[in-house]
Each structure stands twice: as C-alpha cells, then as structure tokens.
Length: 289
Ligand SMILES: [Zn+2]
Image (cartoon, rainbow, N blue to C red; front, top):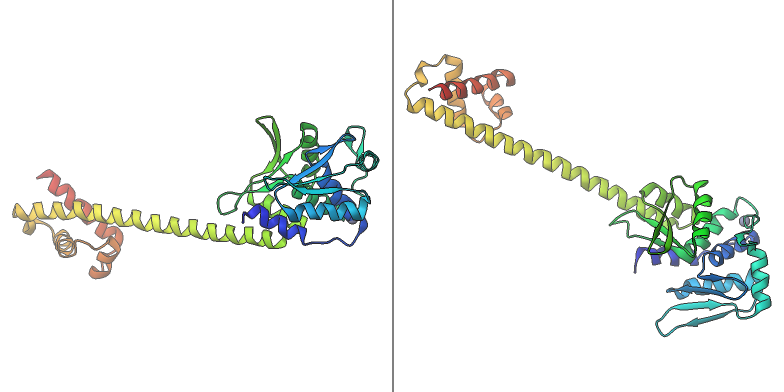
C-alpha cells in the first residue's frame, strides 16, 4: 500500500461531529473533484473508502441523491444525477465561478476543508524517498485558490503547470508534517517524523564513517612516505649521522609502520607537534640525498 493511500484510509476513518466541519470537508472534496458544474458533478478516486466517505458527506450534509459506481478499470466514480441536486450543491459551494466566501464558517473547519481537498486530489510521495505533498487541481483557477488558501496556513507552497495540469505542492519535511497533523493524519505525521530522524541519523553515521576513512587513508599515506624516507636514510648508512631525536623518531616509525601519529605519540611519549616535525624533517633529509 502506498503512503498516500495509507493517509487517505486514516483520514476516512475519522468522523467529525460538528456539522460545520462536515460541510467544509464535503466542500473540499467536491470543489477539487474532476467536474463540478450544473451540467455535471463527478468525483473519481482509486479508493472505495474515499468514495464512500464522500457519499456519507453528501447524504449527511447535502441531502442529495448520488450514485457510486466502480468502473471496469476499478475506478470509483461518484455522481449527482439530478439537475436540482446539482444546482443546490453549486449554490452552496460557489458564488459565480469562484468558491463561495463562506465555505469556512469557523476556525475548526479549516482542517476539515483541507482534509476534503487532500482526499480529493492530494498525493504524498513515500517519505523514505522524498518529502513531497502535492495537490492536482482541476483547473488553474482552483490551483490559484488553493495556493492562496494554503499560503495563509503553511508557508511556502509552490505552484506549477505540468502537461496542462496544475499542481500546488510542498517539498520540505516540516510542511508535510504540519499538513498531516493539521488534517488529522496523526499516525502518518509521526511516521514522517520517525523517518526523518532515521535519515538524519544515517547521514550522521555516514559522515562519521567518511571522516574516519579519510583519516585512515591520510595515515596510510603519511606513514608510507615516512617509512620510504627512513629506509632510504638507513640504506645510505646515514641513520647514525642524525641527531638523537631524529634517530629516535626514525626507529619509532620504522618499527611501527601502521601506527597513526597519535599512536606513535602514545608509544614514545613525544608531543604531537614535536614528532610530526621530526618525521617531516626525515622526509626532507631523504629528499636531499
Ligand atoms: Zn467546523
């Protein structure tokens, strides 16, 4: 089951008790359905739960006749066959060709309205892959309306046209979490937060491990250069010509070719900067031979 469908199932299980919110949810679903006019009202969805949810709202708040059929392709289609019923719905939801100004009667209705919109045309990408919540709007006008509506609630929505279709979307985790919480998909919101924490943790572990690898490679390189230099000095019979501190450093590195600088300091009791300086000096000497 996709993440999107899980959210929709979670939302369909909720039942508002306030009639103002039921009306707002019904408005959200119908305004963003495929057709909403006096000639035709039709709502399409892949999910029978969502279609049944709309039927419940139509019955409860609009008190109109409706039909719910499942097409051969398995798509659920809800229609309002009678003209008088369609006219009634339009008069409730629209003023002219715009959504009516009094769809949201009380503050409590905002989340119910958005829940309806999400059930109608919302889509969520699997948060394991990316954070993206988008609404495929039935027209440019409705996309602009939703964009304006959302801007006042969760900041930074985006709007785009792709192949003649209009999308309003968010693509950051905080907006996805906020929207899910707002519409009441609490389980889904928690799931997104959990995934985000896991991702952050994984990134952190990767960063630490990359850092450790880089340090390891650095140690191997440095040690290889130093050992080569010391072997050259020994082969040329010059070890005994070195000062005591340089000689000690040379022997120390020769006997511990795989040790990091810190480990060499621990073995010898030398300071890090002192020993580092001596090992560099040995390389310079070998280069000058
Ligand atoms: Zn309400």
